Length: 174
Length: 221
Image (cartoon, rainbow over all chains, first blue to last red; front, side, top):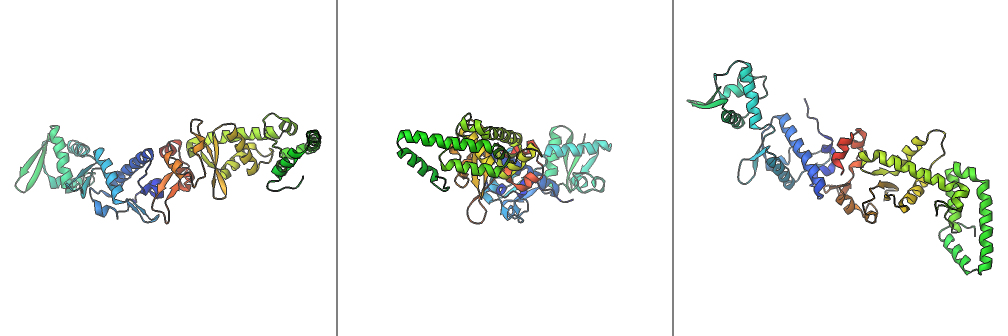
């Protein structure tokens, strides 16, 4: 299914960081929303800031407009403040886009586990993210780092325990 | 005296000013009488035909008379011309208020014209864009918060709250600062040539999508 761009995406000034404070607020809110839904749609989790400029979301070739690197940084800072983004390095060249937060993923995973009566079973991380049983679940294909975070969130809630096994990590659900 | 053209009214006024008072009185009375006759003879046409109104206005301007100078006055009472523009002014205010939540208080003269005509119905009098411009000028003079911004060959009509200082509203090309400041315009710095200013109110894709009031409010203050 192709992505449905919001009308702002075809509005040329949307790609210029607005000088008016109130206007900029509206603009940034719309950008945050667009980035999160685009990344969610494409199931992308990480972004390299320098490569981002060429991504369709920040570069609309049809109207010949793209966000500057500076503007992309501003949008990312907004996302970070909202808890949807984390920098992977000190120099802020690469980041994680969390269109769904670890707690939310954890909830989905636990729902699946309990629905299938598999509480008290042990899973490897691989089984959860790439097993045949989870093929139709939203968390199928979830990247390792995010899966781990989600399980850590569940662990904090007392609903799971992360185990270290011979060939990797696993998890037990309660 | 009946020559039309730039400055004819001013010249006429000057000539009148040089005339000795008693004669001046007589001339004034004569003009008035003639115009009175003319007006009552053509009252119907004045109300019915916009072209006639334009010509009548030009004629008045030539001899330095503004039939709309005072709401209640000899001219407007005599001709009903004042009533016509007063009623039109009310209609204009109604259209602008009705659309304000969608366009943020900015409307093209074209669209305003279309909607006013629609509102008047099939059997109502003909209304031209010239009529609208005059009516808006009247509204502006009465301090109703209206302004007209020249754009391209036409105008944008701006209905603003009374609190905004109307002195800041100037020609669109020079008003970019103001529009930006008020959050009515967005800056596009990637346009070829100079920076451009866009008005969400006029963005065709936006208006063609039948935007809900909530969506429009998202983009304008």
